Image (cartoon, rainbow, N blue to C red):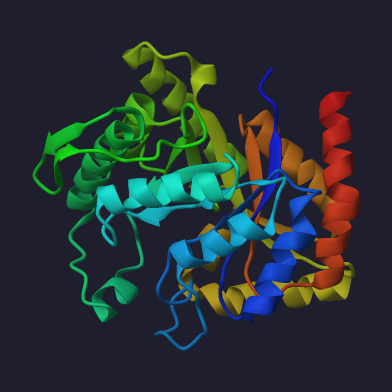
Length: 316
């Protein structure tokens, strides 16, 4: 049976660097996974008005600050860096972390930040083509002595990527919820899949589709880990839970209903059943997505009470 990992997806926004690093250290031992996200502006978008740190730089500090949890980025948008740069960064981070790094890749969504920083942001079909090509290039660079690839969007010529990662096979995670293209890329190339802010029912549907895609390619279902990110909006009191829900609605606006379907709302007492719902839906990795400010007492309760309770339920 695949081991279920419980992690945290920590958005590096609206926090000082000292507070961000303290959060990683606090979560390193009790959790199995810590990730950043790849944005240049805040998420959800607010026009570049919130302090925000860059992902690759942050991950170097995360690798050095921790020693237990596996780490990564959910997910790098392949339009911001060439596949060769991402492969080199992944190898470097794997060495910095002692073999704990996993590389998340995605087709991106934050058009506002891309245009603000001068990046083209083509339509989703083109971005998925870019993701497909980038994943192939990176897999080659991480596993082959030399890699040549000439695609429509990316190319490498007799390229090497040395040193090799610490891990014999550095995991590649593809993020997204597209039933045809995204899950097809996962089935063909990835070691893991991540979905953000979907209901447990929708996760189960997507998980079944991924199983079918894997069967079509001749791969075993167990060859791909299945992860979900849930926004963390818990509070230790009923009144606080209402306030956290209101704060989340203010942050997300018209997108609130969609994101709320994949959120931890209420109190920590409600969270165990919610996490287990996703495990029953097929999740092997359940990550709380922390977006400052959060209820710190609720985070303490999640780590102290919810995580052990979930693990006990799974062991039983």
